Image (cartoon, rainbow, N blue to C red; front, side, top):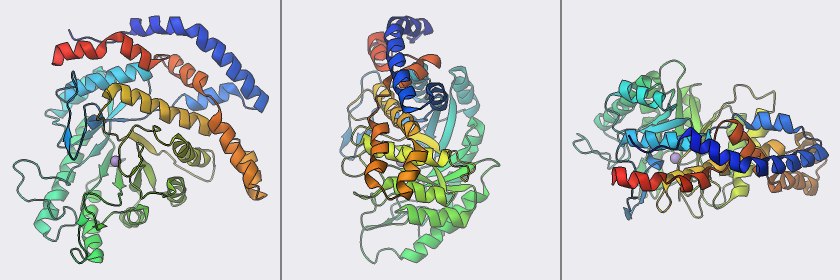
Length: 421
Ligand SMILES: [Mn+2]
Protein backbone atom coordinates (compact mmCIF):
# COMPACT_ATOMS: atom_id res chain seq x y z
CA UNK A 1 0.00 0.00 0.00
CA UNK A 2 1.62 3.26 -1.05
CA UNK A 3 1.40 6.44 1.03
CA UNK A 4 -1.48 8.82 0.35
CA UNK A 5 -2.65 12.13 1.75
CA UNK A 6 -5.96 11.00 3.22
CA UNK A 7 -9.22 12.91 3.32
CA UNK A 8 -8.97 12.67 7.08
CA UNK A 9 -5.62 14.47 7.08
CA UNK A 10 -7.10 17.24 4.94
CA UNK A 11 -10.11 17.53 7.27
CA UNK A 12 -7.88 17.79 10.32
CA UNK A 13 -5.78 20.47 8.63
CA UNK A 14 -8.91 22.40 7.64
CA UNK A 15 -10.45 22.20 11.12
CA UNK A 16 -7.33 23.87 12.47
CA UNK A 17 -7.30 26.69 9.90
CA UNK A 18 -11.04 27.26 9.51
CA UNK A 19 -11.50 29.81 12.35
CA UNK A 20 -8.80 32.07 10.84
CA UNK A 21 -10.33 31.64 7.41
CA UNK A 22 -13.76 32.64 8.73
CA UNK A 23 -12.31 35.79 10.27
CA UNK A 24 -10.49 36.62 7.03
CA UNK A 25 -13.62 36.03 4.96
CA UNK A 26 -15.74 38.28 7.21
CA UNK A 27 -13.32 41.15 6.63
CA UNK A 28 -13.13 40.45 2.90
CA UNK A 29 -16.93 40.40 2.70
CA UNK A 30 -17.17 43.77 4.43
CA UNK A 31 -14.63 45.28 2.04
CA UNK A 32 -16.46 43.93 -1.03
CA UNK A 33 -19.81 45.25 0.19
CA UNK A 34 -18.21 48.63 0.76
CA UNK A 35 -17.17 48.57 -2.90
CA UNK A 36 -20.63 47.48 -4.03
CA UNK A 37 -19.55 43.95 -5.03
CA UNK A 38 -21.68 40.96 -4.08
CA UNK A 39 -19.38 38.49 -2.21
CA UNK A 40 -21.54 35.45 -2.88
CA UNK A 41 -21.64 36.17 -6.62
CA UNK A 42 -17.88 36.57 -6.64
CA UNK A 43 -17.49 33.27 -4.78
CA UNK A 44 -19.73 31.44 -7.25
CA UNK A 45 -17.91 32.96 -10.22
CA UNK A 46 -14.51 31.95 -8.81
CA UNK A 47 -15.50 28.47 -7.73
CA UNK A 48 -15.36 26.58 -11.08
CA UNK A 49 -11.75 27.60 -11.82
CA UNK A 50 -9.57 24.66 -12.90
CA UNK A 51 -6.27 24.25 -14.71
CA UNK A 52 -4.80 21.13 -16.34
CA UNK A 53 -1.36 19.87 -15.37
CA UNK A 54 1.18 18.60 -17.89
CA UNK A 55 2.55 15.09 -17.41
CA UNK A 56 6.02 16.52 -18.08
CA UNK A 57 5.56 18.90 -15.14
CA UNK A 58 5.20 16.08 -12.61
CA UNK A 59 8.84 15.03 -12.72
CA UNK A 60 11.99 17.14 -12.83
CA UNK A 61 12.40 18.85 -16.18
CA UNK A 62 15.69 19.81 -17.67
CA UNK A 63 17.48 22.51 -19.55
CA UNK A 64 19.56 22.03 -22.66
CA UNK A 65 22.47 21.47 -20.29
CA UNK A 66 21.04 18.56 -18.42
CA UNK A 67 18.53 17.32 -15.95
CA UNK A 68 18.82 16.79 -12.22
CA UNK A 69 16.47 14.01 -11.13
CA UNK A 70 14.39 14.66 -8.04
CA UNK A 71 14.41 12.11 -5.22
CA UNK A 72 11.08 10.34 -5.04
CA UNK A 73 9.90 11.62 -8.42
CA UNK A 74 7.50 9.41 -10.39
CA UNK A 75 9.19 6.61 -12.32
CA UNK A 76 6.43 6.10 -14.87
CA UNK A 77 3.11 7.48 -16.04
CA UNK A 78 1.02 5.67 -13.42
CA UNK A 79 3.07 7.24 -10.64
CA UNK A 80 2.73 10.60 -12.37
CA UNK A 81 -1.03 10.13 -12.17
CA UNK A 82 -0.68 9.29 -8.46
CA UNK A 83 1.10 12.61 -7.95
CA UNK A 84 -1.45 14.46 -10.09
CA UNK A 85 -4.23 12.95 -7.96
CA UNK A 86 -2.42 14.07 -4.79
CA UNK A 87 -2.15 17.58 -6.19
CA UNK A 88 -5.85 17.60 -7.11
CA UNK A 89 -6.86 16.25 -3.70
CA UNK A 90 -5.13 19.27 -2.11
CA UNK A 91 -6.27 21.96 -4.54
CA UNK A 92 -9.45 20.55 -6.14
CA UNK A 93 -8.45 22.68 -9.11
CA UNK A 94 -6.36 20.25 -11.18
CA UNK A 95 -8.72 17.48 -12.34
CA UNK A 96 -7.08 16.86 -15.72
CA UNK A 97 -3.68 15.80 -17.04
CA UNK A 98 -2.24 16.58 -20.44
CA UNK A 99 -0.10 13.86 -22.01
CA UNK A 100 2.83 14.11 -24.35
CA UNK A 101 3.41 11.36 -26.89
CA UNK A 102 5.87 9.61 -26.99
CA UNK A 103 7.36 10.96 -23.75
CA UNK A 104 4.41 9.29 -22.05
CA UNK A 105 4.26 5.58 -22.77
CA UNK A 106 0.52 5.03 -22.61
CA UNK A 107 0.76 1.27 -23.12
CA UNK A 108 -2.83 0.12 -22.72
CA UNK A 109 -4.87 3.35 -22.99
CA UNK A 110 -8.06 1.72 -21.68
CA UNK A 111 -6.29 0.56 -18.51
CA UNK A 112 -4.67 3.96 -18.11
CA UNK A 113 -8.02 5.70 -18.48
CA UNK A 114 -9.60 3.39 -15.91
CA UNK A 115 -6.73 4.06 -13.49
CA UNK A 116 -7.10 7.82 -13.94
CA UNK A 117 -10.86 7.64 -13.44
CA UNK A 118 -10.37 5.71 -10.23
CA UNK A 119 -8.14 8.58 -9.04
CA UNK A 120 -10.76 11.15 -10.05
CA UNK A 121 -8.72 12.38 -13.00
CA UNK A 122 -9.32 12.65 -16.73
CA UNK A 123 -7.20 13.63 -19.73
CA UNK A 124 -6.85 17.07 -21.23
CA UNK A 125 -5.30 17.95 -24.61
CA UNK A 126 -2.87 15.48 -26.21
CA UNK A 127 0.54 16.76 -27.30
CA UNK A 128 2.40 15.36 -30.27
CA UNK A 129 6.15 15.51 -30.71
CA UNK A 130 7.88 15.96 -34.04
CA UNK A 131 10.57 18.30 -32.71
CA UNK A 132 13.00 15.55 -31.79
CA UNK A 133 13.92 12.14 -33.16
CA UNK A 134 12.84 9.07 -31.21
CA UNK A 135 14.91 5.87 -31.00
CA UNK A 136 14.21 3.66 -34.01
CA UNK A 137 12.47 6.41 -35.96
CA UNK A 138 12.76 5.90 -39.72
CA UNK A 139 13.20 9.47 -40.96
CA UNK A 140 14.84 12.36 -39.11
CA UNK A 141 13.26 15.69 -38.16
CA UNK A 142 16.61 17.44 -38.23
CA UNK A 143 15.41 19.67 -41.06
CA UNK A 144 11.77 19.86 -40.05
CA UNK A 145 8.66 17.75 -39.68
CA UNK A 146 5.28 19.01 -40.91
CA UNK A 147 7.08 21.54 -43.15
CA UNK A 148 9.96 19.30 -44.31
CA UNK A 149 10.91 19.45 -47.98
CA UNK A 150 10.63 15.64 -48.25
CA UNK A 151 7.01 14.47 -48.47
CA UNK A 152 7.99 11.20 -46.78
CA UNK A 153 9.12 13.06 -43.64
CA UNK A 154 5.94 15.16 -43.68
CA UNK A 155 3.94 11.96 -44.05
CA UNK A 156 5.66 10.42 -41.06
CA UNK A 157 4.95 13.54 -38.95
CA UNK A 158 1.28 13.59 -40.05
CA UNK A 159 0.93 9.89 -39.24
CA UNK A 160 2.37 10.50 -35.76
CA UNK A 161 -0.21 13.21 -35.09
CA UNK A 162 -3.03 10.94 -36.29
CA UNK A 163 -1.75 8.22 -33.98
CA UNK A 164 -1.76 10.67 -31.06
CA UNK A 165 -5.39 11.47 -31.88
CA UNK A 166 -6.18 7.73 -31.80
CA UNK A 167 -4.57 7.35 -28.37
CA UNK A 168 -6.38 10.48 -27.21
CA UNK A 169 -9.72 9.07 -28.34
CA UNK A 170 -9.17 6.01 -26.17
CA UNK A 171 -8.24 8.22 -23.20
CA UNK A 172 -11.27 10.50 -23.55
CA UNK A 173 -9.25 13.54 -24.59
CA UNK A 174 -10.91 16.15 -26.81
CA UNK A 175 -7.98 18.11 -28.22
CA UNK A 176 -4.63 17.88 -29.95
CA UNK A 177 -1.93 20.49 -29.38
CA UNK A 178 0.76 20.91 -31.98
CA UNK A 179 3.99 22.73 -31.48
CA UNK A 180 6.71 22.23 -34.07
CA UNK A 181 10.27 23.49 -34.16
CA UNK A 182 10.31 23.76 -37.95
CA UNK A 183 12.34 26.61 -39.36
CA UNK A 184 15.94 27.39 -40.14
CA UNK A 185 19.07 28.82 -38.64
CA UNK A 186 20.43 30.76 -41.64
CA UNK A 187 19.11 33.17 -44.25
CA UNK A 188 18.37 31.34 -47.46
CA UNK A 189 18.02 27.95 -45.79
CA UNK A 190 14.22 27.84 -45.92
CA UNK A 191 11.84 29.28 -48.48
CA UNK A 192 9.38 31.13 -46.23
CA UNK A 193 6.24 30.87 -48.35
CA UNK A 194 6.75 27.28 -49.46
CA UNK A 195 7.47 26.18 -45.89
CA UNK A 196 4.18 27.71 -44.77
CA UNK A 197 2.35 26.04 -47.68
CA UNK A 198 3.72 22.68 -46.58
CA UNK A 199 2.76 23.42 -42.96
CA UNK A 200 -0.83 24.05 -44.04
CA UNK A 201 -0.94 21.01 -46.29
CA UNK A 202 0.20 18.76 -43.44
CA UNK A 203 -2.14 20.38 -40.95
CA UNK A 204 -5.07 19.85 -43.32
CA UNK A 205 -4.46 16.12 -43.21
CA UNK A 206 -4.36 16.15 -39.40
CA UNK A 207 -7.43 18.36 -39.25
CA UNK A 208 -9.29 15.88 -41.45
CA UNK A 209 -8.55 13.19 -38.84
CA UNK A 210 -10.05 15.12 -35.91
CA UNK A 211 -13.02 13.33 -34.36
CA UNK A 212 -16.28 15.16 -33.73
CA UNK A 213 -16.08 17.61 -30.85
CA UNK A 214 -12.28 17.79 -30.97
CA UNK A 215 -10.19 20.93 -31.19
CA UNK A 216 -6.81 21.45 -32.76
CA UNK A 217 -4.53 23.91 -30.93
CA UNK A 218 -1.68 25.53 -32.83
CA UNK A 219 1.09 26.80 -30.58
CA UNK A 220 3.39 29.52 -31.87
CA UNK A 221 6.88 30.38 -30.65
CA UNK A 222 9.27 32.98 -32.09
CA UNK A 223 12.51 31.01 -32.00
CA UNK A 224 14.30 27.95 -30.60
CA UNK A 225 15.23 25.42 -31.84
CA UNK A 226 15.26 27.39 -35.10
CA UNK A 227 17.21 30.60 -34.50
CA UNK A 228 16.77 32.57 -37.70
CA UNK A 229 13.29 31.69 -38.93
CA UNK A 230 10.41 29.72 -37.42
CA UNK A 231 7.39 28.71 -39.51
CA UNK A 232 4.78 29.27 -36.78
CA UNK A 233 6.61 32.11 -35.06
CA UNK A 234 3.85 34.38 -33.78
CA UNK A 235 0.11 34.87 -33.30
CA UNK A 236 -0.18 36.15 -36.87
CA UNK A 237 1.20 33.00 -38.47
CA UNK A 238 -0.79 30.89 -36.04
CA UNK A 239 -3.95 32.83 -36.84
CA UNK A 240 -3.42 32.47 -40.59
CA UNK A 241 -3.06 28.70 -40.23
CA UNK A 242 -6.00 28.31 -37.83
CA UNK A 243 -8.22 30.39 -40.13
CA UNK A 244 -7.24 28.43 -43.21
CA UNK A 245 -8.04 25.12 -41.50
CA UNK A 246 -11.51 25.81 -40.14
CA UNK A 247 -13.52 26.26 -36.94
CA UNK A 248 -11.95 23.38 -35.00
CA UNK A 249 -8.49 24.92 -35.33
CA UNK A 250 -7.61 27.52 -32.70
CA UNK A 251 -4.52 29.35 -31.49
CA UNK A 252 -2.82 28.40 -28.27
CA UNK A 253 -0.95 31.10 -26.38
CA UNK A 254 2.04 29.98 -24.36
CA UNK A 255 2.91 32.98 -22.21
CA UNK A 256 6.64 32.36 -22.69
CA UNK A 257 6.47 32.18 -26.48
CA UNK A 258 6.72 35.88 -27.28
CA UNK A 259 9.56 38.26 -27.90
CA UNK A 260 10.51 40.54 -24.98
CA UNK A 261 8.15 43.47 -24.72
CA UNK A 262 5.26 41.81 -26.55
CA UNK A 263 1.90 42.90 -25.20
CA UNK A 264 0.58 39.40 -24.60
CA UNK A 265 -2.79 40.56 -23.24
CA UNK A 266 -3.35 42.48 -26.48
CA UNK A 267 -2.49 39.34 -28.47
CA UNK A 268 -5.10 37.53 -26.37
CA UNK A 269 -7.73 40.21 -27.05
CA UNK A 270 -7.00 40.12 -30.78
CA UNK A 271 -7.40 36.35 -30.95
CA UNK A 272 -10.65 36.56 -28.95
CA UNK A 273 -11.96 39.14 -31.41
CA UNK A 274 -11.18 36.76 -34.28
CA UNK A 275 -12.80 33.83 -32.40
CA UNK A 276 -9.51 31.97 -32.56
CA UNK A 277 -8.31 31.86 -28.97
CA UNK A 278 -8.12 28.18 -28.05
CA UNK A 279 -6.30 28.27 -24.76
CA UNK A 280 -3.15 28.80 -22.79
CA UNK A 281 0.07 27.30 -21.70
CA UNK A 282 0.71 29.18 -18.49
CA UNK A 283 4.21 29.80 -17.17
CA UNK A 284 6.40 32.81 -16.49
CA UNK A 285 9.70 34.08 -17.82
CA UNK A 286 12.40 36.60 -17.17
CA UNK A 287 14.08 36.39 -20.59
CA UNK A 288 12.55 34.00 -23.11
CA UNK A 289 10.85 30.62 -22.94
CA UNK A 290 12.06 30.12 -19.37
CA UNK A 291 9.11 27.92 -18.27
CA UNK A 292 9.21 29.26 -14.71
CA UNK A 293 6.26 28.96 -12.33
CA UNK A 294 3.19 30.95 -13.43
CA UNK A 295 3.08 34.32 -11.72
CA UNK A 296 6.56 33.97 -10.24
CA UNK A 297 8.12 36.84 -12.19
CA UNK A 298 5.33 39.08 -13.41
CA UNK A 299 2.02 38.52 -11.63
CA UNK A 300 0.64 41.82 -12.99
CA UNK A 301 1.02 40.54 -16.56
CA UNK A 302 -0.82 37.37 -15.58
CA UNK A 303 -3.60 39.47 -14.08
CA UNK A 304 -3.84 41.59 -17.26
CA UNK A 305 -4.21 38.41 -19.35
CA UNK A 306 -6.94 37.15 -17.00
CA UNK A 307 -8.55 40.56 -17.19
CA UNK A 308 -8.92 40.23 -20.98
CA UNK A 309 -10.44 36.78 -20.51
CA UNK A 310 -12.95 38.05 -17.96
CA UNK A 311 -13.79 40.98 -20.17
CA UNK A 312 -14.65 38.53 -22.95
CA UNK A 313 -16.43 36.10 -20.61
CA UNK A 314 -18.72 38.91 -19.43
CA UNK A 315 -19.36 40.28 -22.93
CA UNK A 316 -22.61 38.87 -24.36
CA UNK A 317 -21.24 39.53 -27.86
CA UNK A 318 -18.50 36.92 -27.32
CA UNK A 319 -20.07 33.50 -27.82
CA UNK A 320 -18.79 29.97 -27.11
CA UNK A 321 -15.87 31.23 -25.12
CA UNK A 322 -14.13 28.35 -23.32
CA UNK A 323 -10.36 28.83 -23.48
CA UNK A 324 -8.42 25.82 -22.20
CA UNK A 325 -6.08 26.39 -19.24
CA UNK A 326 -2.93 24.31 -19.02
CA UNK A 327 0.27 24.79 -17.08
CA UNK A 328 3.38 24.28 -19.18
CA UNK A 329 6.41 24.59 -16.95
CA UNK A 330 9.67 22.86 -16.34
CA UNK A 331 10.62 22.12 -12.76
CA UNK A 332 14.35 22.19 -12.41
CA UNK A 333 14.74 23.15 -8.77
CA UNK A 334 11.38 22.79 -7.04
CA UNK A 335 9.43 19.74 -5.99
CA UNK A 336 7.01 19.44 -8.92
CA UNK A 337 3.92 19.09 -6.71
CA UNK A 338 4.90 22.15 -4.69
CA UNK A 339 5.54 24.10 -7.88
CA UNK A 340 2.14 23.08 -9.29
CA UNK A 341 0.41 24.10 -6.03
CA UNK A 342 2.12 27.50 -6.23
CA UNK A 343 1.35 27.95 -9.93
CA UNK A 344 -2.28 26.91 -9.61
CA UNK A 345 -2.68 29.35 -6.75
CA UNK A 346 -1.00 32.17 -8.72
CA UNK A 347 -3.37 31.58 -11.64
CA UNK A 348 -6.38 31.40 -9.38
CA UNK A 349 -5.41 34.62 -7.65
CA UNK A 350 -5.03 36.42 -10.98
CA UNK A 351 -8.35 34.94 -12.14
CA UNK A 352 -10.08 36.06 -8.92
CA UNK A 353 -8.66 39.57 -9.15
CA UNK A 354 -9.87 39.84 -12.73
CA UNK A 355 -13.36 39.04 -11.42
CA UNK A 356 -13.04 42.05 -9.09
CA UNK A 357 -12.53 44.57 -11.89
CA UNK A 358 -15.40 47.05 -12.00
CA UNK A 359 -16.08 46.70 -15.73
CA UNK A 360 -18.84 49.29 -16.21
CA UNK A 361 -16.67 51.88 -14.44
CA UNK A 362 -13.62 50.87 -16.48
CA UNK A 363 -15.64 51.19 -19.67
CA UNK A 364 -16.78 54.67 -18.67
CA UNK A 365 -13.19 55.74 -17.99
CA UNK A 366 -12.11 54.37 -21.37
CA UNK A 367 -14.92 56.23 -23.15
CA UNK A 368 -14.04 59.47 -21.34
CA UNK A 369 -10.31 59.01 -22.10
CA UNK A 370 -9.36 59.01 -18.43
CA UNK A 371 -6.14 56.96 -18.28
CA UNK A 372 -5.56 57.63 -14.58
CA UNK A 373 -8.87 56.35 -13.27
CA UNK A 374 -8.97 53.50 -15.80
CA UNK A 375 -5.62 52.28 -14.56
CA UNK A 376 -6.69 52.79 -10.93
CA UNK A 377 -9.63 50.44 -11.45
CA UNK A 378 -7.29 47.70 -12.63
CA UNK A 379 -4.81 48.42 -9.84
CA UNK A 380 -7.47 48.37 -7.14
CA UNK A 381 -8.51 44.89 -8.29
CA UNK A 382 -4.91 43.69 -8.63
CA UNK A 383 -3.89 44.98 -5.22
CA UNK A 384 -6.83 43.40 -3.40
CA UNK A 385 -5.75 40.55 -1.14
CA UNK A 386 -7.92 37.68 -2.37
CA UNK A 387 -6.49 35.13 0.08
CA UNK A 388 -9.84 34.64 1.91
CA UNK A 389 -11.62 33.98 -1.39
CA UNK A 390 -8.92 31.61 -2.65
CA UNK A 391 -8.96 29.63 0.59
CA UNK A 392 -12.74 29.58 0.92
CA UNK A 393 -13.18 28.26 -2.61
CA UNK A 394 -10.62 25.53 -2.02
CA UNK A 395 -12.17 24.60 1.33
CA UNK A 396 -15.71 24.45 -0.04
CA UNK A 397 -14.52 22.31 -2.96
CA UNK A 398 -13.06 19.82 -0.47
CA UNK A 399 -9.42 20.81 -0.84
CA UNK A 400 -6.93 22.04 1.72
CA UNK A 401 -7.08 25.61 3.04
CA UNK A 402 -3.27 25.80 2.82
CA UNK A 403 -2.25 23.02 0.40
CA UNK A 404 1.46 23.84 0.38
CA UNK A 405 1.77 23.70 4.16
CA UNK A 406 -0.22 20.48 4.33
CA UNK A 407 1.86 18.89 1.56
CA UNK A 408 5.06 19.67 3.48
CA UNK A 409 3.63 18.41 6.78
CA UNK A 410 2.17 15.26 5.27
CA UNK A 411 5.56 13.69 4.58
CA UNK A 412 4.35 12.70 1.10
CA UNK A 413 7.67 13.19 -0.69
CA UNK A 414 9.81 11.46 1.97
CA UNK A 415 7.38 8.52 1.79
CA UNK A 416 7.75 8.47 -2.01
CA UNK A 417 11.54 8.56 -1.73
CA UNK A 418 11.28 5.35 0.29
CA UNK A 419 8.82 3.77 -2.12
CA UNK A 420 10.32 4.94 -5.41
CA UNK A 421 13.93 5.51 -4.53
MN1 LIG B 1 3.90 25.37 -24.39
